[in-house]
Length: 325
Image (cartoon, rainbow, N blue to C red):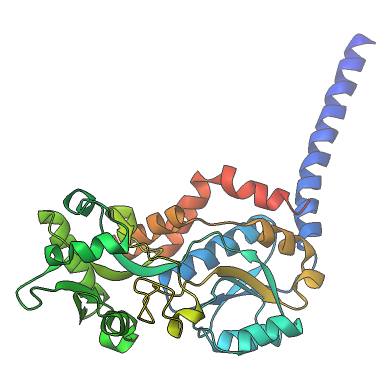
């Protein structure tokens, strides 16, 4: 009788194990629900590719089928509003035209929350300059130290490396409108700007540059951002009481874009679990800076880098999936 009882218990344990594995597979199938692939937008820059592929990889872990579809930064909004594309995990809220806010207001595009990234566009300098110019990152200290940043072609004014000319003239406009003691010189290209950073860093030379984040340079070198009084607002373009000088306009710094996760109107209805996963998903600047360094600077394959990150960071992404249960 004892032997028979032991055998029965083994059989029961085996059945329980089989049933448990079946439930795991079933849970993924149930979570996925709709078998239609979730079409995830791919834009023109690597940072967005990272956000898209992390999102897609997490959704695949939860049992969903995903498809990556290339779309322009502006045309994507019409496609999402029409339901032809389903998910965009990195939408920058500046320079987006009228289609996006109108579609959100109409309910054709649903905002799932912020991505977690802090988008920055402003003037930055290497952190070692804090010792050479006490008072930084305050813009008033920058003005006092302007000659530190001078080169032969700009002296006695400081040199500011601005975006390439075909990217716009925001830095030049602010310098000239407010009379700041700097000369804005257009960078030749992103690569040329990075070469300037590396050269300055190597010799601990002064450097002031218009730049953005996230970007891989922030994973390799340390920079601080100039701080402007009041911060940017549309009123700064017409109200001289705002900004650095009380008799000048357009001297408040730069408009910053919030970065959001968005989806098509029927996303939650079609994929309720995926909707909750994407609401929970969050990617910070440090993560994206590091992955950008691996892909853009070290020239590694994006798929390989994302897979490596997924393998090493289950404790980060598993709670996102758990949020759907």
